[in-house]
Image 1 (cartoon, helix red, strand yellow):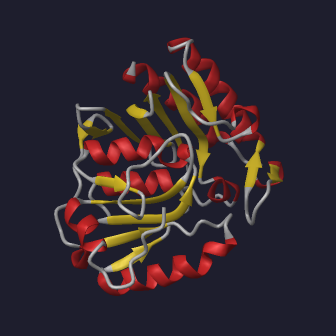
Image 2: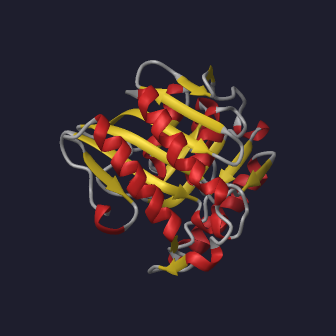
Length: 259
């Protein structure tokens, strides 16, 4: 199943590489800088066709249109056709396709593909995480010796002050901070040991479903900012990191414990 998912995601994700009118194709959704393009919709439709052939009884939960619903009991593909749509529109080349398979609320298979770099991350519960077929593992440094990836929750203006106050705290506590604009890629950077910690105060399940399994299978920690487990029937905050940096976060004066 995982190999078939990888093949489907690569086939659909490569559509991104041939786009030259992304900015002209965008439509604004509710919230600041919240966009969708015809390519989000096309890739989502193609993924639905490919994935539902693999598991016809599964739900298909995705970011756009009629697929915007909560994953329930049983199996569900949780899909972000283009994570980093604003990056895609601006040709920033940091976007990916993200697919997680949930079974009764637990992610068991995951694929995240960045067509611009050719990096294909995958994981199966209990069997490790991989980048282009090679095992990956989180880093093993304290927060003070790590980069921190920051998500700014741009659709939620009420979170700006808390986000940047925490980013300032983490900047002081670490080597430096980074902002990619694609949460699934940030989580994969944790899994690959490129960053030691990631946070964002509000994300949807399709933003983190696949990446969360890739992180944990690479030996990392993923939770809400409070330390509570993630849920995939509704969104919320996300904190991920290698175990040392993740635990260091909760020792910081001024750390947030937002659900």
